[in-house]
Image (cartoon, rainbow, N blue to C red):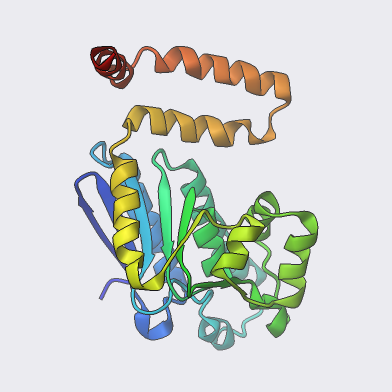
Length: 252
C-alpha cells in the first residue's frame, strides 16, 4: 500500500498522507512519495491547486520515532541525507507553481506541523492541534524552524519550540500559523467549498502571485517593487487577463 495517495480531479490535485495506523508518521518512504506527488502535480498543466490531507484522525504526528530507535548506527552522513529529504520536501512546497492548501484534522506535530504550515494556506478543524514536541525527547525542530520564524513573533516561536506544548487550532490562528478554523462537524464541506472557489481563480495569476510573493521575501524594498512591476507587465500579456477584462467590461 502506498504511503501517499494521489489523484487529480477538476483541476484539484488531492494528496493524502496514508499511514493512518501510525497517525501518518513520517518516514523516508513517505517523504519520498510525497515529494514525487508534488513533482507530478507541478508538471501537470491541468492542476490548478493542491489539497494536502492526512488519512484517519490525524494530519501527521511527525517523524516516526521507531525509525530513529532502530537506527543506532551513528552514521552522520546517513542522517544528513535523511534530513535533506525533509528539507527538500519543504522547498518543493515553496517552489511549487500552484497554491498548496493543507487541511488539518487532529494532530499536526513536529515535522507534520512543519509540512502543514509550509502550505500556502492552512485550513483547520476546531479540534486540531499544532506543536513541536521534539524538545521532549531531546531533539530539535531544526528544519521547520525556518518556516515558524516567518509565521509568528520571535517570542511565540521560541516558546513553541522550547516548551514542546501543543496548541489548539484557534490559538494557532491567533498566532498567525494558520488561515481559517472550521467546525469539525462541517470541516470537510467547508474545505471543499474553499478549494473549489480557489480553483476557479485564474491559474496564471495564482502562479505568478505565488512566485512573486515568495521571491520577494529576501529582497530589499526597491528590488521587490521592481520585481512587482515586472510581474504586473507580464500578467497583462496573459489570456486569463484578457478574458477577465472582457468579462468585467461586459458587466459594466
